[in-house]
Length: 89
Image 1 (tube, one colour):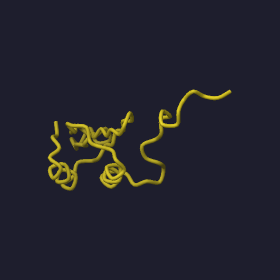
Image 2: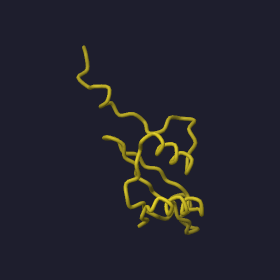
Image 3: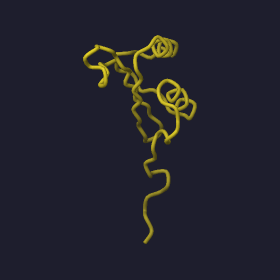
Image 4: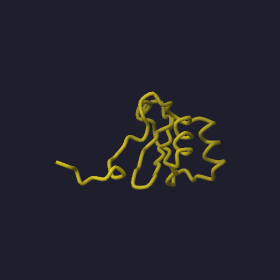
């Protein structure tokens, strides 16, 4: 029996295993045609709720796909978002 689902409609993982995470992964995804959906959200990090550390929740879109990248707060990610004029809420 054949499936009616075309190859382009089959959901695929945003990042394969073994690919770097964090800002490096974000840069790689942007190079692959993903775009950042604004605004980026700065929220308390799930892992560090007691310390008050923030993380940036970045939604990326490409065609009909969406992916979430969460990056811990740092001067590098703040500078990266500022350089791209990405609003943070």
